[in-house]
Length: 468
Image 1: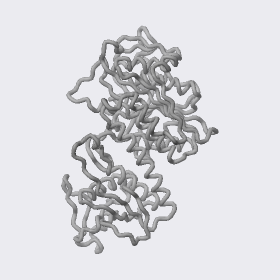
Image 2 (image 1 turned 30 degrees about the horizontal axis):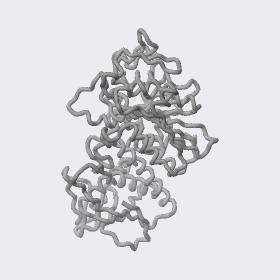
Image 3 (image 1 turned 90 degrees about the vertical axis):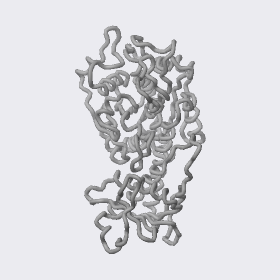
Image 4 (image 1 turned 135 degrees about the vertical axis):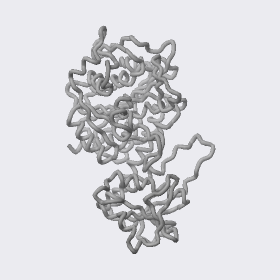
């Protein structure tokens, strides 16, 4: 689906017009009939000739950027259902033109996403062209940026949706190598021997139950070496069965999405490289499978990390933090000034904040920039506390700390665990995206399946950090 710019003379199948809902009753929209979708009535109206689709925006004071994205995402699927091949977008004139154009295009591109590569019957895309008329250079630039941010999100969605028997740790590494080939980013992959040499004991322990061995993947993008180094650390469990502490449930297929933290980092780097952002950033991905086997890690196992911290494995289903510890130690070893780790880490975060917000923990300055990035990108975050007294919950009788906390506050104790592996002079934040990793149903620009959450958030954070 292409976005093109026109002087207004280009012929199109349909016109997409965003208006304040009260204007639907005005003379210019008389005769328009409300469109009924599969879910019943909508806030979409069609004229008798079928040439104009009007979207009611509701009250101006209640309209925000995310709602406009969502409406655009819903509209594009309606146009697809009608077989429209080209559409002219009329901006609503509520925000400034460049903001509106970017939000609408991003919403339409993401709302038209589908993951059907393994289906026998594939629905062909009818909508080939989105037309914007009389766009100035600011609008054109904003649309260009929106396309790049949408594509980075789609990369993250595709990776999250891949079946676990196809996206093994080595395959994820190969994808990253190919994705950034012939770009300014440099990719380095550490396999078994190098992991042992570098004492990446958490990743090795988590992955030792699988015949598909772990990988540590570094994506380094330095377009301005004078900028402080930012490390983005992503959890990449391509499947998490829980290991010996086996998960229960009739269907745990979504555990293929336990690598969505890494997918977010990959999508973010994709955006930053294509945007040619002046930055100094490294993506660090800890990729493994957590499976039960005679050689798997076992509850009560002891892990000793090279920073001197010993860990009791009380539950093998709290494996992500064990692998992330290696990524955090590595980020310290390369002197990253700012560190953000992102992971589908705890059900507690999802229970607290639902599927639209990720929990964030850590240093206030990094957290504030992440919140601003979330408001801009639509990948929302919300800060939770890290009370020092909760350290008691992760103490062990025979190790320094335990990989699972006692009692409640599971998201907080996971963050406290990770803090033990952050360098003393680093500014750090932890993003627990267990809730928004997946859309259970299609709504707005979110399509059922992996959401691509975090790609836009992290890219915008890096941009914000370099401007701070």
